[in-house]
Image (tube, rainbow, N blue to C red; front, top):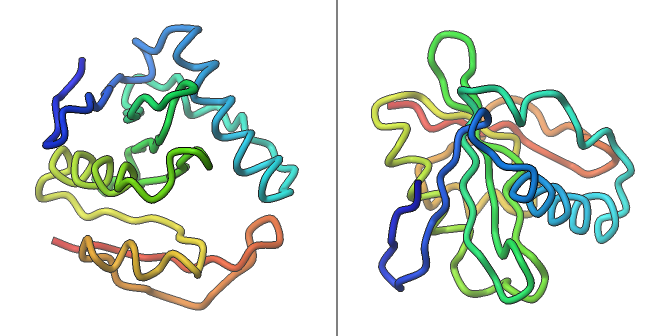
Length: 151
């Protein structure tokens, strides 16, 4: 399923059970390129949640494949967890992640949403109504903070 956004880019919105091998490969390539290689964080990227039927994968194409991506997971008690928010180096500064966040939050509707933000990105998520909760923590050596958007 794809939705058009204001600037005519298409947001791809695919559940885990409908993700093709090619789509999964492209998404994983971007996530590994940025999180593992660029940020130098060797961590277990494959966590077993990508192919779960309730997982939603949202992405925008870029000139070299997936330009920006995020996924939404169902949490206990109905909350939605937004994660793996990533934009390819060549596609940064174009507002792609913001478009994906808007789509994810539109889909979440009245559900509470949670995410673990790298601390430098707190301001980005605050623009979408997320507020920090709890203490800063290290995740693979990078400072993070849990943020909630409670409806």
